[in-house]
Image (cartoon, helix red, strand yellow):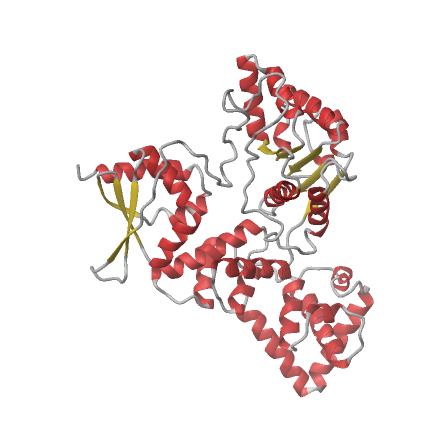
Length: 478
């Protein structure tokens, strides 16, 4: 009997693990310990008040579903919150009222929930002749344009997406194809488009579906002899959003049915939105007819966010969660994690968790230790953007001023120092460095570096500024 609570929690973890990414599971669920189970009440122990609040804000629905599966309707969950490192602890009970029916929950990792077309038919198919679609759009309402941080890296796809959202099927962006690497915000953006469409045109039928789910539905329709219902269902949509179409590769029959759906929707001025991890020209093993249609509208790429955008993303995330961190820490995280947004947000969560678990203040030293474990080879080439930000902060200027055409002495000097460090500390060619400073040519960079070297030899104050900036660069990087 004493081990029953461990078994219940272990089974809950199996479901949870399938619905969160590995980093989140390791951070927020592995540290939890089961204490007891009595009369459908499971008690778990969490490391801190912060930990409890995070679970309640971000994972309460997932916990509810897992608990219902194990203990049935009427299940409850209690938290035992550790106050300090002694044996004393404070127990706070929080009740989860698990519904008696199976209610779908909105989790960005679960996109395969059945489509609610009509209560009298087997989802996701419709009966012939059904004119009005009543479907669950499968959209994550947490993904909106308001919390999609705009920067140079995503301005085109975001602007195009907003135009489509306000006039679906009525712009030249049909289909709208958004492509880019992992973790750059493709899924966020298409959900934001869908949510905006539902906001401005509530009567339109909108459906988000992953390519994997689409394939599985089609395979099931073939097995059950429901091909026509499958086709009719998708052809009656007003807006179809398909994520990761690159996974249609080598699936000839799936491509054929999607080709028919695509043609029908497009001919009837219905909006099609698709995502991919690469541009249409780089997609392999897809029917040429499909590829040609992908190119009909607009293909917009999401690029790796620059330093300024990464800082803005972290600051917005902190604002959302009511967290305050020193700007030095934020800039350090943004500089060292530059591959994608998902890793950037994961690093912030891990830093908060480390501080909570170890009962430490969040400082730069803790951030450096966390980065070593979070990012392989955290020591990396310094970026030009990072140098620009550090130098502009030192002189109380903006990066835009460094890039401007102004000839004010203090701005010119800061610009020259930035170019000097960019040439010293990055592998960027002179032409690329010049492009980062308002499109200047390589000769301007050479002149800037020579000027800095001359002033270091002749101007004591200038030499001190350069030495101080150099120290700051070393302090904030490995």
